[in-house]
Image 1 (tube, protein in one colour):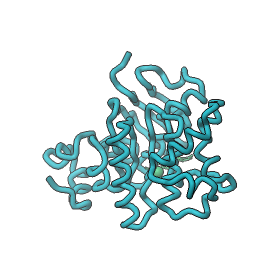
Image 2 (cartoon, helix red, strand yellow; image 1 turned 90 degrees about the horizontal axis):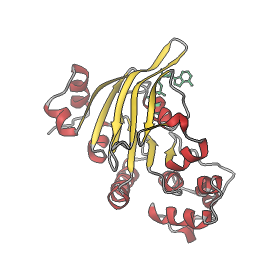
Image 3 (cartoon, protein in one colour; image 1 turned 30 degrees about the vertical axis):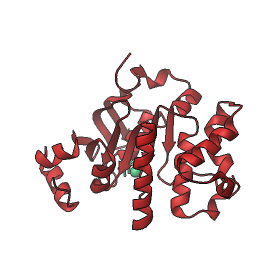
Image 4 (cartoon, helix red, strand yellow; image 1 turned 90 degrees about the vertical axis):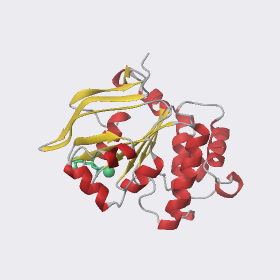
Length: 245
Ligand code: ADP
Ligand code: MG
């Protein structure tokens, strides 16, 4: 049994002539939050979707607890890896509770309803107030909380979040970052968090993987990036984001 929660080994993915991922290797320890940081088009979403087998690599492997992800049933994979897509991905014609119940229902859980309500409480939404609402009746921040609740409802081992705070105003963003940190402290779930904001990554993640056109420039703790940027690109990114020791 591997001590690692999640691993990408030499993962390559092409779309026609575009090399979205070029031999990417990175691992996530149990309970760790790894941030994927990079400009638009650097391959962050593609890597995230390789982790939950929504994208199939052309070469390389994804391991979940040391086992090849391809060997897992799709429903089992959905249960073990929660996913918050870039736009939140809530079904507009489903009420909040039905949205959050999605994965427990796929598993035919008899407790799907309770699991959904527990998940809503976990992200700081009172079920009495929110469970019957439609997604359009939520603020941007509430919608993102529901999307996170949905990813957590089946108690996955790993949660993948694609720019979960990207589209929010500054105050809501800070509120959600705080809620996320509190959640992380309470449930200690293994997390891969995509963000284009290096500062956000330093606040929320244990380690940061800097991506650039399909390659990893550097993977390190925030202090490591600042102390010893591996490339000129990382140095410039740090300067631009005003991240310092
Ligand atoms: P990021 O999330 O960092 O913005 P993506 O992983 O979405 O980057 O994209 C990486 C590269 O792969 C980009 O050049 C993008 O245009 C390309 N790409 C991503 N998904 C597809 C797709 N389904 N079809 C064709 N090209 C794609
Ligand atoms: Mg993306």
